[in-house]
Length: 291
Image (tube, rainbow, N blue to C red):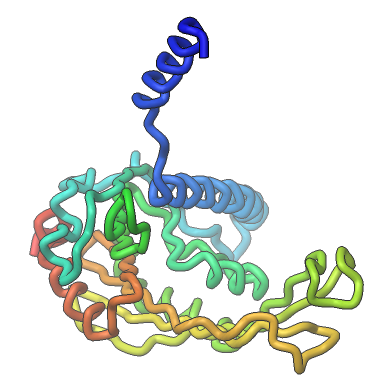
């Protein structure tokens, strides 16, 4: 290799050495923020329709418009932004976790689980449980360099105090339509059917249930999501994908703060209950009113 070629290769290697490539956890966090923005966009359309309806019904006896949405500008007196120390810390976990990937937002929706949101949308129920004033999120993986297994994902939202009282009722109202949901998907066959490339339809059953209540904070629910095998519509005896393990999420309210907590495959339901209590103590420092 000529000296000038060798110098060029060394220059490229030095330049690549200072490039920061995003890890998988960062890419997932970016995707989650984009999904939230899409949900907010859909919510804006719904809000416009509701606002139009409110104008149309204004002044009619016995009818009133929908309640005014609570946003950052309508914050009551007290703490507003959510500090990082109000979230779980690595020392709270019984497993090894790398550095956290964190984020913050304004006026974001509380969507407990994306698949649940799909079920609610199909059942004509708003998937947006509540619009937060402020939010803070974090996720931990085992090792950002070598092991991308998720150990903890936590979102903390600050909501309007007048809406905190409807916490449990809003959860129950969204559980009932999705006790049994058939998710039907249509896509191109990639080798499972007689003709590769043809459109095929598959289905899987989903269900959500509250398996524990009142174990932490002012309000708390533990929600379990169960999914069946995925089967072909035209050959229901054929299993395309085995049933995954049930997924669990804890939702806890402390004053005007709500956290949505997901743990990795290492966690049992007792781990969720224990860490929900720890998360409550952390949130107490930033809640309105303080615990």
